Length: 251
Image (cartoon, rainbow, N blue to C red):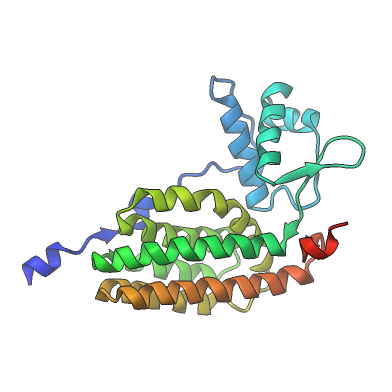
């Protein structure tokens, strides 16, 4: 019994919480050598949580004034955001926050499903025990009105699985895609009926991992990602400033 217990590892949201700056108000940033990276993170997180909404016009002057920095780090940060597909050239002058593209979200979910399935399989092989508070935190958030809390709870749960897998490359590979997922989830959770069922699925995934059912854990994660993708694409199609199909809209 002691040996079986020792093989389990408890992963908590406190150990694996994702440290992200609070950017809703785009607070002023002090100058220092890593300022470009900080400006980039501030803008990326503001886009991710919807503070900078899809279709919002961005100019170097305005952003520099709001962040209390010079235009140069803002310019470099905007170039990085453009490479990530989070901003586009605006007609005339400046840039626009990219619309929520349902097809791109579907692509992201395909990649995330593969990474999550691998993480769940490895975690189950280790019979890892995910902190029950992760699911409880998510259920509480789902019953409230704080969309940011719902998104953060979801992300914390999946990152706990990445950590439990023992493979650090999984989290590193998945992390760049979460900014797209966060902004889509923030948009659709405003009126979604899927909040509580999502946490039933999470609880079933955690249970399969704890029991060491590697194939079941991977299957549940893949099904979870597929259902989430279908639901998000359907909801995004109903929202304004959303591109529902890149291929149909291409010239």
